[in-house]
Structure formats: C-alpha cells, structure tokens
Amino acid sequence: MCSRDCCSKGGVSRTKDGNPCERRAEKQETDIIVPTPQSLLYPYEMIQEIADFLVKGSGIRPKIGIICGSGLGSLADLIQNPKVFEYSKIPNFPVSTVEGHAGKLVVGCLEGVNVMAMQGRFHYYEGYPLAKCSMPVRVMKLCGVEYLFATNAAGGINPKYAVGDIMLMHDHVNMLGFAGNSPLQGPNDPRFGPRFPALVNSYNKDLINKAIDISKAMGIESSVHVGVYSCLGGPTYETIAELRALRMMGVDAVGMSTVHEVITARHCDMKVFAFSLITNKCATEYSEKKDEEANHDEVMAVAKNKQKACCEMVSRLVAEIQKSL
Ligand SMILES: O=P(O)(O)O[C@@H]1C[C@H](O)[C@@H](CO)O1
Image (cartoon, rainbow, N blue to C red; front, top):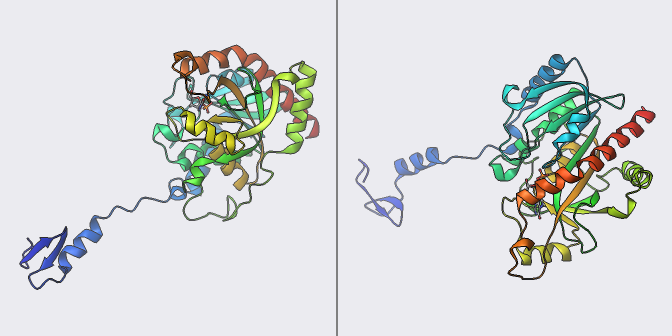
C-alpha cells in the first residue's frame, strides 16, 4: 500500500475510491525496460572504429569478406601473409562460443585479392541479437569489402542431396523473419542502406554460374546443387514435423546462420555468394534409430572431410573475381 492510502486490486494499485493510483502508475512506467532496437546496438561510428582498427592493424583494405561455417575454418588458412586478429582483442567485438568456430579474423591475400575471413561466426542461439550476429558484415563493408562469401554447414532436406554435397544458395526462407526478428530492426541508418531493402536476387547469379563452371572443372558437378536454404534459431536440430513443413515450403537445406548476414550484406549493397556443405541428411520419417539424429560431432567430421573441396571452390571463385577487377 502506498503512502496515499492505496490498495492493490487485480495487480493494479488503486485509491480507496477505486481509481488507479497515479503515483504507482508513474513508478511502473519508469520500471518498464524497453529493449534497445537491434540497429542501435552498433551505431555507425562504433562500426567505423572497428573497421579502422582492422585496416590500420593489417595495412590492408579487403575486397572480399569470407565467413567460415562450422568446421570450415580452414578456408581462412588459404590466406597468404595473414594478419590474425583474435576476436577478444578487437574492440567491441563479440566472442565465438561454438566448437568449430575459432574466433579469429584473418586478413591477407588470396589469389591476388585482398580478403578478410571470419574463422568463427556468431549465432542467434549463442544469445546474441541478430544485429550483433551480423555486425561483422558491416565492419567488412566499412573496411572496403564488396563481395561477401558466406559458408555454412547444413542439414539436407532435399532427398536428392547426399552427405558431403555442396549446395550453392540461390535463395532463402527467413524463418526468424517470419517471427518478426531482423538484424535491421530499429531506426535505419541510411549510411548503410535503405529502410526497406529488396531481397529478390540477393544471391549473385553471375557468381553462382561461375561456381557451377568451377564445379565442372573440379569434376564434382554431380555433387553440387543450387538450392534454397532456411535458417532456424537453433540450437535444437529440427523435429520431423518441422522438416516436413520446411520441405513443403521449398527448402532444400536447413541451418542456423547465414540469412541475417546476407540480409545485412544486401542492405549495404554487397554482392553475395553463399554455399552450404550438407553435413547430414535430415530424416523426414519417424524412426527410433539414433544414427538418423543430427549431431554436431557428425557435422564437424563431415566438414573436416570436405574442407579441401570447399577451399578449392572458394579460392577458384576468388581467382575468377580477380580476373574481373
Ligand atoms: O555456422 P554454421 O551455420 O555453419 O553452423 C551450423 C549450425 C550450428 O551452428 C551447427 C550445428 O551443428 O552447425
């Protein structure tokens, strides 16, 4: 009861004559914690500071940014004369908490092109808001990056996909977006891009065609597909009913990343190339068999096995871009 002689009825403090207690109402208002809109977590100036730190520290303005998926960190090992930044030493950078994501940013040269690679990405399930997960993409942009290469480990839903196949992403279904979550949520800073960015043709067709040609040159075209990826929040793998629903929506591979990075990259007008390494086949029939359940050890093991082909795909594509620069 407050000093104005109020009583609490149905969770609302009221004066004796039944009117809501003004003082209580004022207090409740100040108690409300309004969540910070995602886009305000990393203002332009803070991203600029991180970019300046990396450009100054490496002496390099990268043209291509690479995000290494689970177990695909060796993509960054291709980089010559690498300057390595541990995430924990980069001002205002989050840290990686997932096995298979080393937490290092590698800047250097690949096939004659200045590149920057993230050995470790940030996932929503780690507890980071989406804008924080994809903040490094904006850092890349302000460092000078024009092309984003995003890679991921994913479960194959398309029954034609086998473990170890590569799926070149040509579109996505943004399940977190369906639920009203976006890395662009909150006030828009036009220095990054427009309020309402279009996402049709987000995945660069020319780069997809080049990657198909590369797969032919590598003799792996029968295990390379072009398909649709969907990102769920994780960290749980999907239920059978969810996988069936995704398949009905036209999804070929499912994972827990990439989409918010692509949204952020397209917002600031980067060219995007992305692929999934199919690390497990998603079961769409009910079964008691333990070996049909997805698990991170299997994801990591398949990624390790297939890293050579993934590395070759990336370096050949970078070499193609180099020709056009
Ligand atoms: O970072 P990516 O999307 O490659 O990692 C996938 C999704 C989860 O982080 C993990 C599950 O095994 O691999």
